Image 1: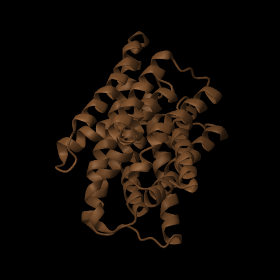
Image 2: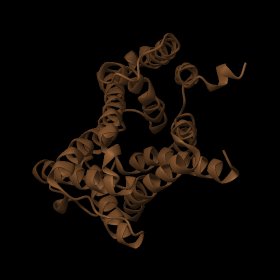
Image 3: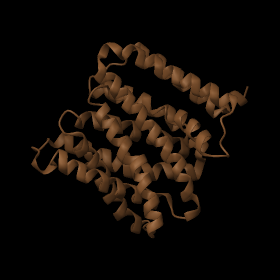
Image 4: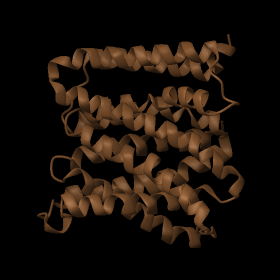
Length: 294
């Protein structure tokens, strides 16, 4: 990768790691669906304005929009909600580490749902190592009560949802649409899914003003960690390839943990470090490039 690609990669990891920090700022003040609605709604608005300026088309056709509805559910509505719910019980750093299991789930889902991405012995070893890391992290969490365990399971469910979305997204390759156009479609759907849930259960319009710090966190979550991050991610794939873009998975927890410790007063336990090392080792084995260099 070029120096510019590495800069994109590091910036992307900070933005996606920052999403856990922004959620950590908002969670003590706002209810979960309201946070998610602010994220997907504002992000969709930003992309809707940006696409014409970038000369990119809006998605068209009911079949395409129907498919994007599934993406909006699996890639936005479900995981975003699960992470917000989880961070009411666990730290942003721990949530980001569990988010790093997405490629592990991706290997399993791709093996079950596709014919061209089978589970090789090497990948199977990586998956086992990764989920061993999850077991190490969650095993010590039993003393934290049922809420902590369910929060960690919610993070794993969110990671699984991302993996399912990754397999579903394969069908959009032949559409020829730019990735940002597809991202807009799924964010519009996510907004349509979350808005009635927020309205019926939380009545966001009746909530007291949360403070400018929380407003800034919501704007950062939507504009920086969602809209801008999508553009950065797809640009990185175009210039460095999907395999190199995969490296962001290793870096997101670093920025999330650093921000959580520095600004949210969070602590990282020894079992979290041990689990993160095992998950990272599993991802290295799945990726395979470091092993091939020896």
